[in-house]
Length: 355
Ligand code: SAH
Ligand code: SF4
Image 1 (cartoon, rainbow, N blue to C red):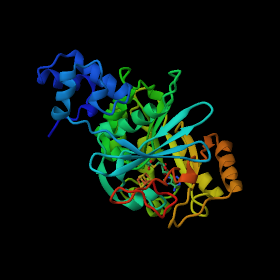
Image 2 (cartoon, helix red, strand yellow; image 1 turned 90 degrees about the vertical axis):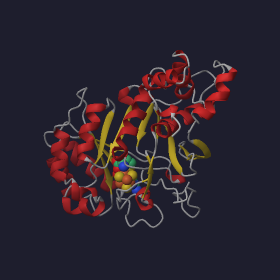
Image 3 (cartoon, rainbow, N blue to C red; image 1 turned 135 degrees about the vertical axis):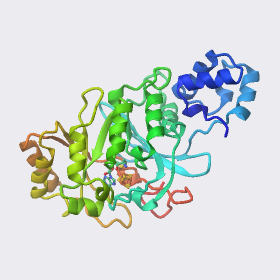
Image 4 (cartoon, rainbow, N blue to C red; image 1 turned 30 degrees about the vertical axis):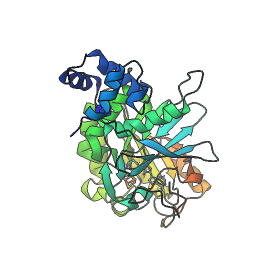
């Protein structure tokens, strides 16, 4: 198989370059072009010799995601559709806010976890993305948004698009490593968050091997409800999940962020808030409440604003810091859980969530 240079870290790239009889310094040049400048082809790498630029495409074809559609939403978010080298497609969303600019990226084509409230879940699992395809989404968006004054267009990255990142652990760890590299985009570790549905062994391995932040999608306060809306709960039920969260071997004393999708009449009662407080006791937790984003065919309802506020107040009253995340990008189906491409990789034409 041809080498996938854009999935390599600098050390691996150096070893590859040397194995081809090339000079070691070319590795840093190529890494910079790929990950700092988001180059889409070797042709752009103007400080490599003409001869080398001509040889590299045969030696190591570049497998980078290409933006094929860009859809601005009314709230300022921009949804991007990427085509992969095999024709499949994934999505990412750019979310500008006053204090940060976040890019939400995909880690798999589809998702095999089957959560009942999630559009991506309805696609099933098609394949894992490579590290190059994961980091490349951020790099392509940054290249697209680069301001003439050189200002950094993206401050934060969240792995909350399509797919379960921790079911694609090696590629996700490598993509985070590339995004952190000062020779690449150079993000701060505190500004990258990987979100998981709760794969306990992979969570433990992840925090040991990667310094970036971890969020866990809790989404229910009883096994009965969580079993129903997140099949992963049958393998890793709530008590075990929370015990694991209490003991995660974080390298930097981080704390877990919990996400909680609020489904009207399902998990948004005062009783749920009380149970949530009980579950979180002893964990220095932060909770992000995400009111459900409907998509065509979805069987759940968004909770009322009053319900969300009451839930929030109960959590705050119990000493848990909680925030409401009004998902952005909803008008173009770019909000949490609305990301879906069809099995052939084309945007679903009939769906608000498509594209
Ligand atoms: N697979 C990972 C990351 C992608 S999903 C995970 O599940 O954590 C990112 C977030 O979107 C998760 O917290 C998920 O619970 C939430 N989500 C999924 N579908 C949603 C929907 N329809 N409305 C609101 N949030 C949703
Ligand atoms: Fe997959 Fe996350 Fe959607 Fe569940 S919520 S189906 S884990 S992407």
